[in-house]
Length: 192
Image (cartoon, rainbow, N blue to C red; front, side, top):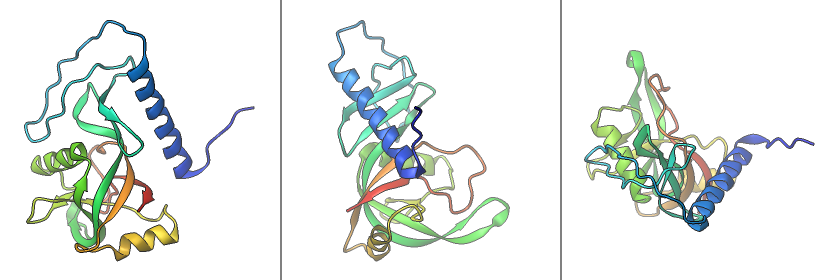
């Protein structure tokens, strides 16, 4: 009998399980010859090179329940996986393609995964308009809270600079050209 995960949370949990399995296999595998891949990094987002798996993804140095990130040999400066971000809710005016201006939900990141923060800031510096930053050089990412519980959504909307929250998120990596104006950079797994 074939099992099919239902809904976004199931897909995220399945992806997380696979990432944890890959991390565990990587950390406890029998010694094998290590192949180091030369990685070109963007100066504002250095990510150290790691041994890559046959799937083409290189795990970053640590993998835990709150952060398990990978980079691909094709995109070594932007991590994919789960991570914790600390911050607060903000409404932001964004202008998309064709001067489409909208008021979007934003999340100002004040702490959490340094690898994701460096990657977001690097994308912004390169001219990527999906995310922004404030005067304190803190990234502001777009997000979609429609997939979270009513209680988690209320926690997000009630957060402030003085009362921040933590979100466990899945970061699928940057989208190619043509993202919607209010594009969500992450999928929210849990809010605390």
